[in-house]
Length: 456
Image: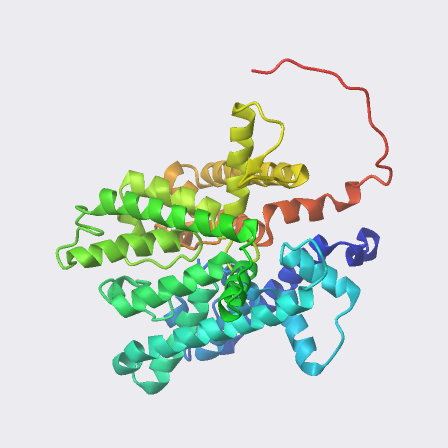
């Protein structure tokens, strides 16, 4: 059926879904070229190319190949561009190019931008696009400069600068790709304070969301006395709470684990830094300084929870988002307290917004359960359900952490993993809206008689 019959132009959700899909296909075709593989090696194959392109565009960091050694410079640059496009958003990048060229951004394009920023009003969308470009340039430039201090002496000027660019873009866009070609991610840098701190700062800034970072920057730059918005306060509180909670769990659980933080060569302050690094990156980035396959059960549970929640709206990370889980919890609390309205900080939250948060959380849980169960059945017991659950939730939360299972999955399971990545990045609610677009009723003024059923 022709796409025009879906009326794509009238649906921001569909445009975002198809936009990401088109970029993934284009990236896969480029990565499948012989030029994308190192000299003397055969092409990585169309399937590996699609998986890597999906992972990069959806800012995840999982791969069936080693990015550092399995791709040529051309292939690695293609992946880097896909990461940047996926991180700040395809429509954001397009609109920024329009602004540079002096072209006018149409009303329909503003609507799509508003949708991608999770922003209801159209006012300020173009200004937000400028802020996104500025924030991205400043944050990634800051990261590149600091990474160069350490990586240039280690790898030389050219390679050190290249690694610094890759690490900075990957960290800000919350992607855990290993470009060093060692298949060890950041384990060799477990004791490097500068690399760890800068990576964590970039991950947090990217995960906060452009709206929050823009508001904080404006308040500091203009010394504004205006109070922070409720959204910004909630994001900051949730982010700090999740990082602190994860840090405590990882520190207690892994302190004496000789295969992770309890390794003999790690000093006490390096163990503390390692626990904080795991907590920060588990939410959406996917970098790690300890082997994920050796984590204690409590740490695995905490990591799964952090990955599922993910980053914040309009940011570079995935998951169901910090504010979504906050509204879901507040909704449950309001029910237990017998209140009709959901209230926080002496404010009543919009009911449709709360119901959407409940729907996103429920759809996310259902989506993950279906994928875990299906992949477990496909693999016929080759891997435990907890290992498969870890990989699936990492894909859904666009985290990229792995216990090493993903690379060993069968082709049907990897296809499902790609669908999980896509659903996690585009947003399970947006994805569901896009798929059900044709089912929208033209008449919305019909209300049927009320009835009751027994529950509980």
